[in-house]
Image 1 (tube, rainbow, N blue to C red):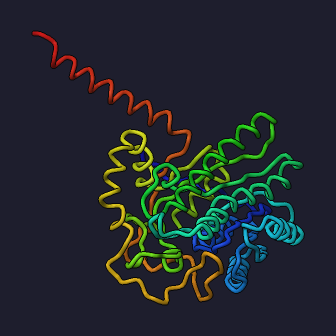
Image 2 (cartoon, one colour):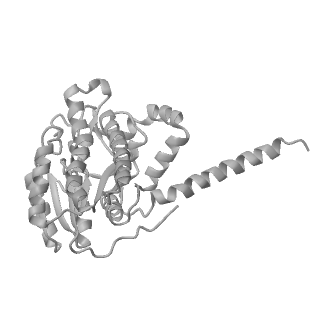
Length: 343
């Protein structure tokens, strides 16, 4: 199914906050997209210099903006940052949890401290952000919280056990909380946006213990693609949004033949995530501290990244998708049955 992604009209007065400790590129692109639609923008990340630069950019786009430095693994610091942003911009309407950390390494080469830190950022960072946002939205009985997932929240791959485990956990946490909000009749919408491979700077600064430089598993999309999907999710309430046909194919294929994918990924999962370039001995790593420098929304794969993808699936389309698959299987079985019937 292919659908042109409808974007919202101008939402002057809407206040959007993105909590992204790693300031990984998708945050900047998402902030731009919300600003283009008239939303005030609040940003939370670790690197103050890049936050200041992003704030200037948002104001140049004509919207109010505020930024606070905080580590999403530190709940108290995140809560204080949200309080300061609300004092400057007003009540938060939309909160996006986009914090992530990954480690490119086989499991047996990851230390307990590294695994804990990656999990605290990628999983607990989203839990903390949800707590902070919900504590403000629930008394007002309105708001939207978006947790950023991945195709890897459904289909894990080698060399990223930290990231995949955390994204699976975020999905389970989100589903559990959603049922509680429905039970309590709380008018706060909770959704997940599952992303494909995205061209962000994380592939330059993620902790990498392999001999080659890492890459997103192709096909690669520019960060503006998920940014548009996140804005769509903020104003068109869906349970989930799957961005890009590779995400759709990955999730569906894992449901149909997970064992086959296990064996396939065992053969090609390493090489698909690594380039032919040697890993520099002095390569930066941002797992425990931010990497300084003029990083923006894009990584180093501009020449290979797709700028457009109007293909995305939402929870509203899953019934049709499942029904179509069931009809196809039924038709196949009917044809086989007829071919085996005696003449």
